[in-house]
Length: 412
Ligand code: HEM
Image 1 (cartoon, helix red, strand yellow):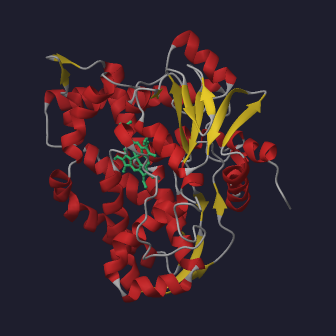
Image 2 (image 1 turned 60 degrees about the horizontal axis):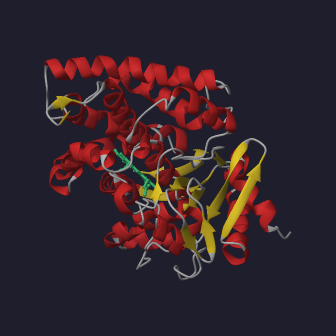
């Protein structure tokens, strides 16, 4: 069945469309071919253009003076837009900031995310990955990989880098799912704006306690860096502090979990690629990036024009918003050979799943290390794996992937 550009454009405002990747990608392919800068109009959303070509996403991300994150860094409906205009943003994270603040606040933790510091985490990652593989064995050859393993392991990593006790993991799992799953009735606390505000208030309460503890007694964890951070000699505000914890706790969780679950599904559905990877572990780094490209867990970010800007013959006006479609850019036929084939040895693989430019994902290296550690633990022990039911995708407009991946397997 063919899709018109007008129908295709509606996928970006329909959480259920992202839960149907086959349809979603068909819609993006139509836009890349027929209307790569497409105006999306919907009664519940302020109009925006969706950018579907890899080269155009790259160009906009690189021109961060002309294209800012504020005031609309991610898509929000008119009710949320109105609330933000009246009361301001609920959070002020790196993704809400532009230069010069963005550079200053990113600089506070940039060193912590450098390879030299992350290398110290190798042993902890290996330990958590072994624990996950062990859990698969304990589950007796059948599990929901998305829920039982992929959702748990990255959260354990994030909470251990923040220095939180294991007893708090269930509480944090619930809160992050409620925040990112707010468009999915199965995961969200409720559908109203009040429900979302209540989730954010719970984050505030939790992380305020953490800040006090790390101010009183700093350790070498990331929470201590955030709690004791200063700008121009003065401590950063509570809002900026809490926002920092929230972005680390959330940006590093569902994203990595979705890449792992979707990556495993791709391996199951491409047994030749699984066998190839098991036979040649030197392919692990390229396999990890291919999984991340394949899934592209962050579905978009938005940018807002600060000036007149012409792209592909279309002239934007100051205040115009664009939605950068990372999943579409990552299937762009002009950049990727055979973009719809899953190739664990893909090289080059210039995917944009981590974005580009000044906002490039701060945790990209950590995410790659985590996924590699898990695969390195599971794959050598895995003798057989298959789907044991229907996988289900989360409904979302922003971050997401599989919420269920029932599998059966033989593992030692
Ligand atoms: C596969 C996993 C991940 C994916 C696909 C992903 C993707 C992204 C994307 C697309 C952006 C926006 C980039 C842009 O605007 O150009 C971003 C930003 C960010 N990510 Fe990730 N991410 C992942 C894992 C992580 C992890 C593990 C962490 C940290 C623990 C993290 C922390 C952040 C932060 C702090 C930002 C904001 C950076 C800024 O605005 O300067 N991410 N990520």
